[in-house]
Length: 483
Ligand code: ADP
Ligand code: GLC
Image (tube, rainbow, N blue to C red):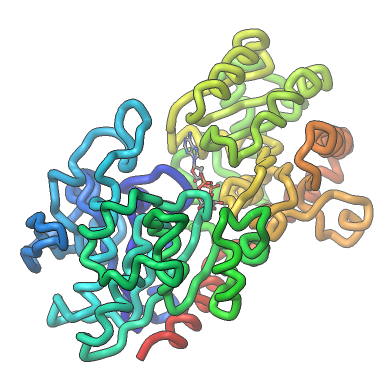
């Protein structure tokens, strides 16, 4: 099965969130189940730098007349064949791949990412004579025009190429002014309610949802939630009408990157059978972050984008209580200024109990998961969420809200779940300080019973979050849509 994966980010080359982790893990996971995977990526500097044995596959004229080059080679970090769009005027900009230094989306984002979908459709039409995909699998709004271009190219295609579109986050939709539609090279008919028109504007997300042969999202619960008005971001009607084509395939953990037994980024190795290293990791992090070095202080961790989605105002509201109960908090994140400032104020007020690192630091994220006892993920909504799974692998008991993929991966430590050995964390329902506070008290209560806590943590570390099952689910979809 020849599959072209199309995404804007990919770990370890370019990452702003979980999308990159998944895009980076899929090639190996799909190869292991027999797929022949190639990647299509925008030519951001770190991606171009990683491309080995690059050759020019084609010079192309984008629908709006811009000349771009398509390179082909092998990505050293991923050991995968890749096509990379070399268009310096579009992609060679410092900082975030999506925003300028003032955190404003680039005005030409519609071109920068339309190009990604458009080139995917060129590859589907045998641009590379030696390799033609049977399926184009595109991810998130950045790559969401691929199914639309493919749909309209089908008349010209010798072989039918299937499309799969994965929603990692329905809240980021890629909506642009109507006037830009004319530049995209799609037929007029596409700008319609039955197409990519969305309240008079042009929606990349809607193109993916409307034209893809199959839609997936990253957890079964989120697949149901996005069909409701509460979580559908205005697209629930379309999603309900395509319910037979929509499924949730749970994200998994790349164990080559996230395993405490082999992780080179943490100071002491450990695993379920030899857990002692975790206490050393905790002491090392407490020292590093200036926290009181107290082995029995329950250490709570947050590794997160600091946005509305993540519900971190609930954490803010509980910090005083958390400290009063003898806990500690470490936060690694960046995002909204008010949240950064509010967290920082707590760290300044209580440096022995609260440590905040504002910024993006891949290696510190590993050290935090290795050190903490509880990973906090109180999200308003969460398509899948990866940090609760990373936390579990590193012996944390996550404290999460029962939404999306959090609901599919964390089981509350109720007495009955503890008795049945299914418990692995703390789950609350209402998006309220009260419900969050009660879950926090449950965490303290269990932490006061070290033998029980250790037994739950040991089982947590042994959970199978491997890619095999999810990769087979994707393969099944590819078979359904390929010629
Ligand atoms: P989302 O994609 O919504 O941000 P996920 O939980 O799926 O949430 O994935 C987040 C990914 O980004 C994880 O790999 C997490 O460790 C990482 N991450 C988030 N914030 C930071 C940060 N400030 N520094 C390092 N890694 C981070
Ligand atoms: C998105 C979601 C997150 C998910 C990630 C990877 O960024 O917010 O829940 O885990 O994509 O699929």
